[in-house]
Length: 270
Image 1: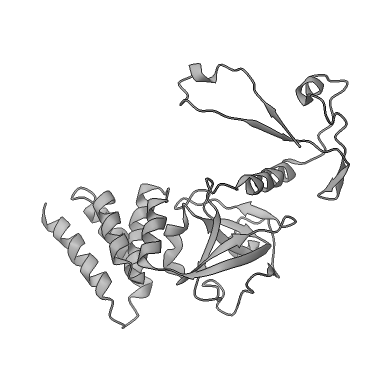
Image 2: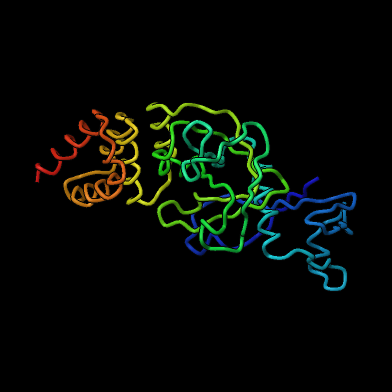
């Protein structure tokens, strides 16, 4: 059961973009247990705002800030029914992690991290499993040839890691389930580009990654939208920096060479 509430406010007067927003308030007829805490909705069936504003009748908040954030993530997952929110995705080579070559994931089963320190700011010390979102995964396509839908078990921890190159697009969890493996194609990469929402500079890194992986049509679309004679030097610098670790591979990459020809033509137009 949910209460759908409408509050009158003056936000529209503060140069806010016009929008509609809802307050979703989960209500529970029976006592529930969450994070090993018992919660009883004492005013079930009644207008919760009436009780929330009454200091004598209002319920004490039993959850920590970290627990409230977890509840928020759980609610977002539950409401992701129409596909309007970015779903979680992971890319890697087959079933092997790019970060841990000796780690092979189980498909359609719960994978549990052997190392998990959620309070650490160092990804290596934090451990767990990393994954991204549909609107940020373009930045990480270079890390594999197979893409998976990611499901996070309801009892798992989930951390939104700070990332300059992909804000709110780098997550870690101590438990993860991978579904629906698909080989990444140029067509798929292009679709993910069209859905992407990245900082401008990250598109140059994403372009480099698509060049390495051979997604030519995706590269040409990124160039058409994001590259011009004014930023070409920065773009080429980012590509050189990004692809340096891959240049030790002696295998020929015609797509990489063809895209570099396009970029150099833009540079020579100045």
